Image (cartoon, rainbow, N blue to C red; front, top):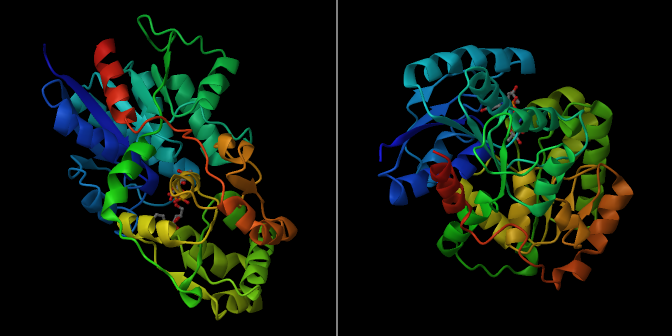
Amino acid sequence: MSKIKIVTVVGARPQFIKASAISNAIRNTFADAITEVIVHTGQHYDSKLSDIFFKELNIPKEDYNLHVGSGTHAAQTAKMLTALEEVYEKELPQLVLVYGDTNSTLAAALVASKMHIPVAHVEAGLRSFNKHMPEELNRIATDHFSTLLFCPTQTAVNNLKHEGFSNTNKKPGINNPAVFLSGDVMFDVNLLIKPMLHATVKNEEQKYALLTLHRAENTDNPEVLSQLVEAILQVLEMGIKIWFPVHPRTKAAMQENLPLTLANQFLQHKNISILEPLGFLEMMQAIHDAEFVLTDSGGVQKEAYFFQKPLLILREQTEWVELVNHGAAVLCGHDKEKICHGVEQINNFRSKKFPYFYGEGNAAHIILKEILNTF
Ligand code: UD1
């Protein structure tokens, strides 16, 4: 059997985490059947958002880096489109593998589908039903350009069904895409990481909640960002210590979009620890040790759940609806009352245990087997 060549396209922090599960499975188990070429678009270029993840997650150095950097959505995506076309022309892959919902995902899938190269989308079928989010547009378009759709949850499979994907896997093609319930590769990664963490016992003084914030819907609207910061200030005033690793987007937005007095009050509060972005292992340890988590990140929502941490979601909707439906998380948006009420109720959901929603930790193997079955 001749080997199949896959081009994997990644570009942003959450994609490095997801790609590590598949890249490692290719090298450890499927090396005789699959050759992988890794393309980094350069969407994330700070070493704290990129290099450290390659190193800690043992991802081979990329074969290409497109160095697209920051820009408007159109400028960033356009640069990726032209550069990716050249890579595909040179490499002639049998399949392009994309992850999640970023501009890198969209660009990679669009170019491949126009060149009639099949696309496999890992994390297919997720929907927030809010098309003001760039990620929602990216994931809808990517699903519709794909031939193999790997869903992390049954909800995602159902979402695709509603959009007319017939869920057949006979001779899949772009007009007849196959939908698979693979489970979530992030759960695979989490199971590998857990044994590397250490048990920590914190005294009252050392206890903290972990906060992350970076969604455009929260950072780019001055009113929303101010309300969120005021809500977090109230939580700090309740005597709760908060660790806040700050995404570069958020750092810039806080300087631009917050009144100076509010920004100073927040950043200089005695109960907040403002941190640089954390590496992957540091972040996992931070979630593992936290009392609870406040976040607008898709990935961190699930990681909080993997560590069975109470979770307050700082968004109006979530794609991970099973967390909310089973009471593992509360949707708070940027509403001060909901956030403070959520914090007051933390002890009520600390004692609950929740079922596994995201597969059995073997999603990468399922995905690679299905890819090999198709070719
Ligand atoms: C992107 C994804 C989002 C994902 C997130 C994870 C899109 C539309 N969004 O959001 O789905 O959850 O990554 O982090 O693709 N910046 C830096 N250094 C970097 C990267 C970004 O300073 O290494 C700053 C720049 O000011 C840039 C801004 O962050 O303009 C936004 O970066 P961008 O790549 O557009 O999106 P993210 O907000 O990171």
